[in-house]
Amino acid sequence: MIMACIIMSGNLTITEKIFSRAAGRPCQAGDYVLADIDRAMTHDITGPLAVEGFYEIMKNQKDKKVWDPEKIVVLFDHQVPADSLNAAQNHIMLRKFVNDQGISNFYDIFQGVCHQVMPEMGHVTPGMLVVGSDSHTCAYGAIGAFATGIGSTDMAAAFALGKLWFRVPETLKFQVDGRLGDRVYSKDVILKLIGDVGADGARYQACEYGGEIVRDLDVSQRMTISNMAIEMGGKAGVIEPDRKTDDYIRQRVPEYHPDRDMKSDEGAQFSAVRKYDLSEMPPQVACPHNVDNVVDIDRVEGKKIDQVFIGSCTNGRFEDLKIAADVMGGRPVAKGVRMIVIPASRTEYMKALKAGLVEQFMNAGAMVEAPCCGPCMGGSFGLLGPGEVGLSTSNRNFKGRQGSPDAFVYLGSPATAAASAIKGCITDPRSV
Image (cartoon, rainbow, N blue to C red):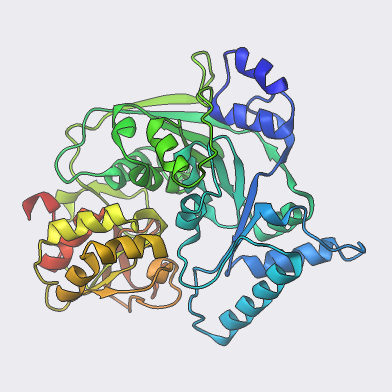
């Protein structure tokens, strides 16, 4: 009843509505609330510290059990299969935790990247408050949830209590209109917005994306946009759920019933509304060593590259791989270039396999790896050496992010990555 009254007030954002439900009382931006968590996710890198913190919190409790084992999701994706003794020990620890706590939502190696698996397996639906001990948890905002990254010690508290304190963030609205041109995609859109706003331009705000272009995107491309809200300092990246969202959720949660009020009211207060018409926007590239160092592709076209990485939680879905394969058109990877392709999940891998994309990439000279984070965070493999240049579809290009601190990482769309792979230098995909 509280939520119904709040909704009828006609002046709340999606974010304020979600927090009002989670806190059990009317909430607006700036309020401090103790909110119920709907889902808590951790993975093999951040999970061990969260588990240690949980047992420290519970050390004086007779029953050292998590608040709700059905609402906790544990995945292995960053260092899989284990690439070191330390990684193997972390996996052993987390497997024991999962077994001891009766956590059924556990995904061992080869299931995929956490931010793909969570929505793919139906763990997130519109209106939820979701936390994950990984900064790109904001990806789930693409289906109308408020999803945000937290630290491992906060995750320990979530495991124990099922609640966390939040300051309800203000909402920065992005109105993105027009129609994207040929071989221009959602990755280009979000790079453009980050380049415009800056790395801290949305600090601790909920980025809400709307407009003609966002409405035209499928859920896969929306995930790319929400995923990178953190790269401009955002607390979350939210997109109003619609019929495309409903179709996506119903395939995974048959009993799902849409809440048509899960949208910002006409009288909602935004910190700002930034309007764009991107009809004439060319492909975008983020240059080393910051994600907001974004330029039109003609500024960097011709830059020689040593490696191309297509994958990650940002652009590793079947739709991304299909874009890349279509651009390549059966042409080989350029001599001297390493191309690594990593589907974001087992499901996406099987889609690509059945569609013949895996064979197409391998025939072109690319390496197709099992679902995992791969080179994205400089973990398991595919690292860049000193002086090398990589073009990646992932979300960060910080110094040392994908290997040597003396390497250089550029970010672009799957189309840009594919065109660059066959040319051996950064290439406008419209020219291929």
